[in-house]
Length: 159
Image (cartoon, rainbow, N blue to C red; front, side, top):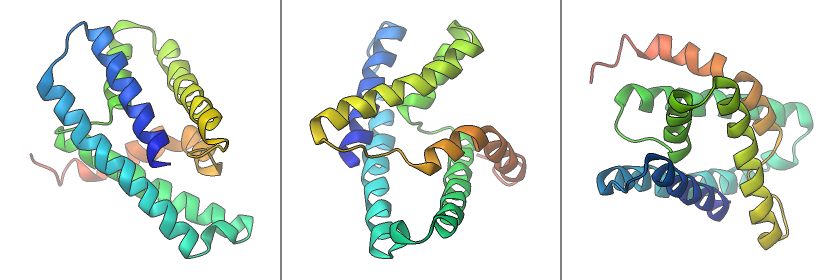
């Protein structure tokens, strides 16, 4: 999973550089500052998930843990947006596309790009990682959950 997430991130960093038309070392450094630990921690949490046996629990318990994980992850996303220090390369790409293309194009692009990268990585690994029920739930609930956290974190964060 680390490889899949990191590969997607590097691909998107390259796409960001192509779309902006210049390589900015400081931005590249900030994107890697986010991407490296993010990729590693996602794998560590997945290993912990398996160690605790959550992946073998019945579907309703897994669903509950998926929801809890998404709420925590989206709270973290809202928090680092408030800090405005470093972003996942895909988030920067989304901001860029919203400014340059239509919102509808950006929405579909954000769905298609990770799916293509996951499929390409699965051809190499002969297995699909980084896609599960949480991916589907997150797709439908991300905006709502992030907005919920942003409203609660904004008064507390004065950076």
